[in-house]
Amino acid sequence: MTRPFETHPGHDGELHELHAALQRRLDELLPVGDERDRVSSAMREGVLAPGKRIRPLLLILAARDLGCDRDHPGLLDMACAVEMVHASSLILDDIPCMDNAALRRGRPTIHRQYGEDVAILAAVALLSSAFGVMVAAQGLSPECRSQAVAELSMAVGTQGLVQGQYKDLREGTAPRSAEEIATTNELKTSVLFGATLQIAALAAGASPAARQKMRCFAQDLGQAFQLLDDLADGHAGTGKDINKDAGKSTLVAMLGSDAVRERLDTHLRRADAHFSRACGKNQATRRFMHAWFSKQLA
Ligand code: GRG
Image: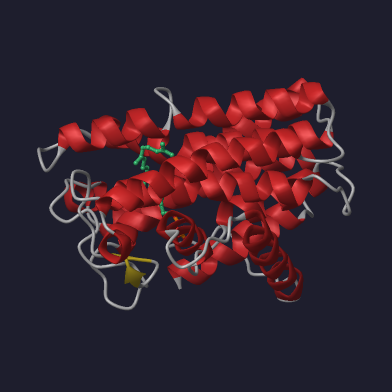
């Protein structure tokens, strides 16, 4: 397979710092309950467990690439809000009536640790906290914050995660066409990437044309991300939690790994072109994407 992206040694330090800053801020934003308050504990565990933080990292890097101040006071909180929504979706995805997963981020799932009732309540509380964090974010105009809230709420609802999950559950293990798989992937993954990047663009005051290119970037990036997930499925050592998506018809099963890698490359090249048109070539977001996919595909 051709490698569309070279790695860029030297930016790991910055990513590491951003990752740590996100972890600290998430820790501050989440409620701390006493030992009887299992909902707060479940919220903390759902978010603070070792996730990759791809969406909040993307938000911060893309906002900076689009011209946002490095020290923008609201960016970290916007990024944390997106991660809280993502964590909420993972908790719900894992419960028995959905994927009934045993492990998430290498640990027992939230319902296995706290019970299904607490898991659902924690997911709902995370979702509402995320919007609370967004409306309180500093350094953004009220109009910008309300547009950001609109983007994220759209990405959760019937045009995004909820619809993707519904389709996924209804499809079950039945055979699916490549188009059906791509649509479900778009709703489950690309749409939240899209909202993440729109929030970055809003914070940076990007032009409508740049925002449109970021939508296209998110679309291809989400598809590439999901194909990577499919390639990792069932392969030991990929870090993927066991039993996830077991038995589902995937493009890997349908077309084979090589063809899926080709598709992934195509999406990455397109993503790269969209981003470069919005922001130019030598940008932190591109370096992050290059390094991430190269590492995963190595
Ligand atoms: C109300 C928020 C909400 C959601 C309801 C349950 C549901 C609808 C949607 C679930 C959607 C879902 C689980 C999509 C999968 C997205 C995905 C690729 C997850 C893995 O993301 P990574 O690899 O995980 O970034 P980490 O753990 O690193 O954060």
